[in-house]
Length: 72
Image: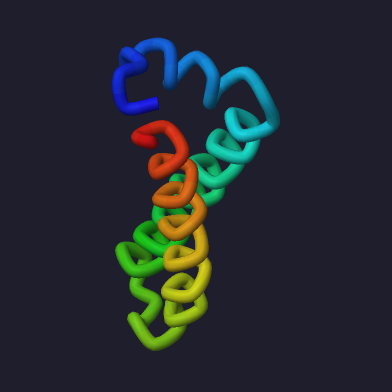
């Protein structure tokens, strides 16, 4: 698979359910960071946004695992 062009590997990775999982993880990450950032800008303390840390971590892990499938 090392000699397979990147474009073909990307097409293969986006053919199945992985593409949907990627979009959901990206959407969750986007909404999470927007909500947490907006709350901080509205005056809520950073301590109230600690729930965002594990959710962000899980989203980043999912995106990294999907990226690893594309790179392979």
